[in-house]
Image 1: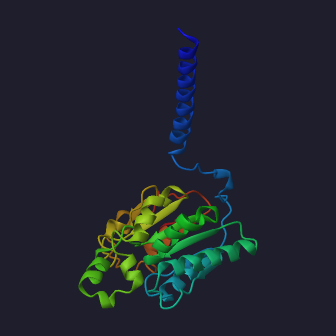
Image 2: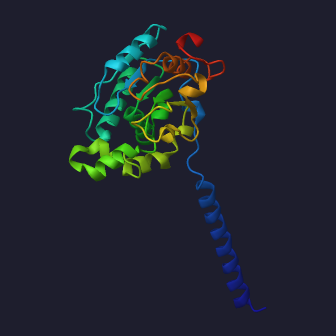
Image 3: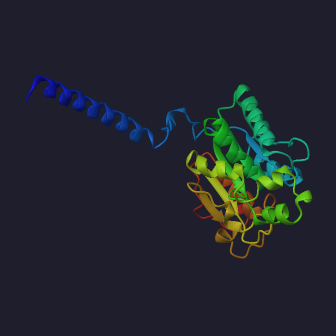
Amino acid sequence: MSPRRRTVLAVLAALVLVVAVVVGVRVAGSAGPSVDTEARPAQDRPGPVLLVPGYGGGRDSLLRLAAQIEATGRDAEVLTLVGDGTGDLSAQVRLLDEAADAALAAGAPSVDVVGYSAGGVVAGLWVARDDGAAKARRIVTLGSPLHGTSLAALAASEVPGACPVACRQLAPGSAELTELAAADVGNALPWLSVRTGDDQTSTPPDTANLAGAVNVSVQQVCPVARVSHSALPTDPTVTGLVLRGIAARPIDLTGAGCGAAAL
């Protein structure tokens, strides 16, 4: 073999090696960024609880749930949503991030977040956008349309004038819900998602199910329960599930039953 031919083959071999290395790096990186579990909040050191209202921003039912949480010795704060709670969900995400940062700056080891209805979507977008998994120890969502609600889709189609920004963002296939699904937030931190089979607002009810989360129907733990969407924050069985979801021990629904007394 001539010296020139040997040189050409050597160059080609070097190029193949370089390509193999580059492809190997790209394949290794294709699984996404690794989660540094040591940087995540300690699960046995609960901090304050932030409660995020749903569409429209009503706080009354969550104030009752917050009182139940405070009765266990935890601090709990119900956020007041920006505007009337029907505007861009991004504003609510920023509000949650500011509240979490304030709690951490005050010395809290982490926060737990309870999101009711659209508030759970806000919590998910916060994890996706602001690395909420580095600030939140646990997330609990109640009847949250994490994959959208057909009710919003119907409103956006039939009565668009009565479906403001947040309503359109809660319709299946919206940019926000697509972002939430792609972020795989249910695998980012311990997450409990509670739904009710009687839900006529987050429809269908299993829109509350989230990959990677502990998903539970109220009727799974209390077959006789009849709980509407609006009653989720104040129902005793749901309250019991929430308290289990934010306990110092790992999320464990073993033995859960009707009423908060089943804890």
